[in-house]
Image 1 (cartoon, helix red, strand yellow):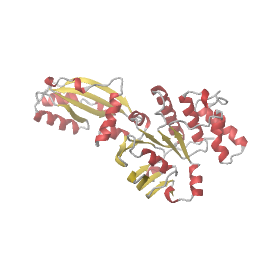
Image 2 (spheres, rainbow, N blue to C red):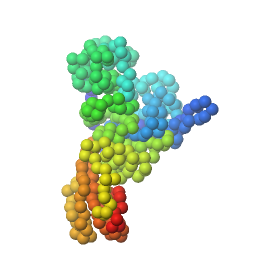
Image 3 (tube, rainbow, N blue to C red):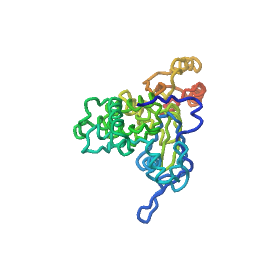
Length: 357
């Protein structure tokens, strides 16, 4: 049976996963490819932690270090206090029983049924047949595949295959679930249903999830925190709320724009007429939307601020508002307005300068 694993405040002081000074390189012909370059990372128990980056950023190498399939050239990979990079093969095999893994292309055994695929890791672990049957039935219900016990992978949709993969990964009641691009082969609606399932599993059982992806929508929808990777390094980390409202690095800003542009309610700033004034993007979180900061700014600066476009998106724990406003003002007034808004915890970026400024 599954057991609830609620997260207490004192559990957050000791990360479940910790990477310290991790470097990893590979030989390719006469060249050396640096896959990871002095990476530090901490994942707290019970978090859904996203790692995002473009192809070649080092994400896949990182996840292979987390399940012990690769060993770091230097540094420590600690999972529950065990250094995977310095452990014996026997210790690694034991540790992997508590590290579940789901894959982009499912990696199911095509000659086995749904139930037999889910049972496979339990058989490898030497669990008795009666216990396996009960556990498989429980997992099939958990992932919403009732009635599909005897179906083969070829008879399943992509979303159903991934649900089998999730059930199989949970078979040995792991402490950590690693997801390697687990939704990138799925259509958007199916992606959201799989993400909702993972989020539900995390909330109900306190399972720590590390999610590798190149899609900011995935991070935005279910993650608590995120690390942004580029060229083998982690260039920015923070809560999802922090990353979306105040991204610092260029690559992070591109990922955030990716989410905005994929929205059905997106706005193209290039269509804005600069003759009407400067275009500002305002980003605020949660309760800030209830404050009359913009109305106060109009009175304070005596500016005819015009709202051009607005939308609200939802992360796992907060609502993030975005407004585009037109401000006909000179440079000094515009910068004073920006400073006024920033002082009230509203991010204000000049997207396009206006002719008036």
